[in-house]
Image (cartoon, rainbow, N blue to C red; front, side):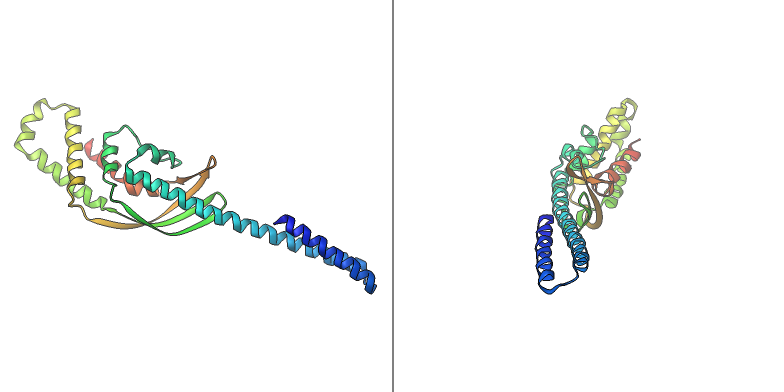
Length: 223
């Protein structure tokens, strides 16, 4: 674009010089006009370049968002961590694996993508998933039923901390796989940034909605 601007300026200069010579125009005025023309042309070129950068950023950011959403849906904790600046998901945690396994039916629709610059954009999307508030309600109910059972009371004296944690995890797995939890659609703004040359999710809006909010709540109950 800049090369085109220079070529246009050279052409305009030639027209001015020859025109001025033929018509005895004031050469100083011609030069002043030329300076204004060059500045305007360069400004137009710069603005066009910025527009091109943000358009490319929008496409790249949306593609990266699609990639991280597929990582969540497939339950790939390592891919989620790779595609987020600071997801901090414990890939070895059994609880994390249980929650991720419930995301297989998550669907989403990208509504808008706005690029603030060539390396920062915001993706607005509707995400449909099981209602985490209902998950927690059913989880608490299942725990109350479990600890009230005669079988649990019989095992209580010899139960280890690990046994207890495993029972709690099993209750969550049962709730999530029951098919009784209704879906809910949430609208979320996700910040995408170019980090180390690659587009990634910044912040906790997306990871919080899909996993860490439930993970933190369950962890508190298990303590």
